[in-house]
Image (tube, rainbow, N blue to C red):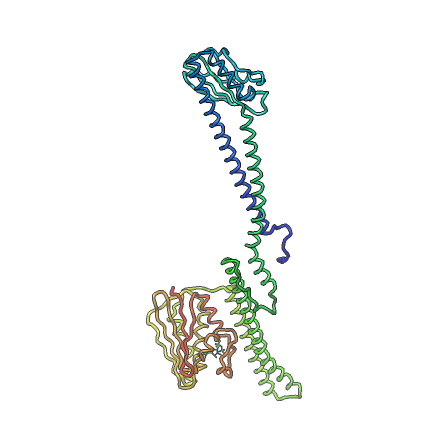
Length: 468
Ligand code: ADP
């Protein structure tokens, strides 16, 4: 059994959509944060390297012109102007011995770091390294230049200021990302709620529909095409259910009606037998009537069951290759005596060659018999009934034509419904199931059964079947 209670563990679509939206937004923010952060750092470092290199080249030029004396004065001037904890300079011999150095007292632990710097062997080669001295909470950038083999000039710069500005940027980025995630949560929730509003409306309306107000329909809304399509699908389904329920109601009414008459008749007979002793002929007559009524009822019930089985696909068709020409000739032969008795001309125009189809022989025989039976039943004395058959490209067409009472245009669509009997023919014996069964059988064979009729002139029932 299906429960109509929503499961408590299943998250709503709104929740899922919001989470997904937030997740996507978070990933996007993290990616943007990482890219911006890395690029900012790289461009800052590039700028610093450029400043250091320019300064180094100036020192190198000065050294070339003024020698170590000029360089000593410049070292002092630079460190004083910038601050001894911000900048340091060194001149090394080609062997790596320190020839000249600015004040390194504020740079604790720098010597070990400097000792580990890769030595520049190529003349005029410029190299960069990042140092992590103990004295500086963050790091420092070192640029070195090989003075044409005459020594190494080094210039170091604290990255403290850069790092601080980088941290500030990072904080702004994090705050921006968090704000964006928060906004995206609200936006996601709003969008998901709006998207689902239409579904909720459809669910509410469908939920309100009960047995007694099946005519109700989901009205079109402005939420979007998909929701209108969903509403349309529901409306079509409701229409089908309504039609089905109407049909079931009609069928039950008709069954009740058709059962009442024979049962009333049988009850009347039973009452008569109880009123007093009857002669044996009367008893015989009563027995025969009861038998007839029982046969009629049994046939009706069997036909109904057969229609249900065919419709539900539960019946087994004994498919075989059938010579349709033979089957039609047999049917004409069978109905000749009936036609003669009613003084109706029964003609046939059938091909001389065998026309084969794949189908259920006995069921198809029953269909043709029903159509011929109807044609003879609803054609007055002196009329004509004609059976013709011809082969089209991949189909075979069988026509049963009569010059009978015909069918009113308003009723032609209804004659295939179960128990439907036309106004004009209600006094003729019948149960209104024959055509319904015929159509179901022909449909199951992949064919069609149609009618064209003119009241008081006659009708043509056309069966088409795929040739096999
Ligand atoms: P029935 O047992 O009443 O003949 P059918 O299902 O065979 O049941 O036919 C349904 C109704 O269609 C009939 O009651 C009759 O009113 C109409 N009908 C069927 N065939 C013909 C026909 N050849 N000419 C006129 N009316 C027909």
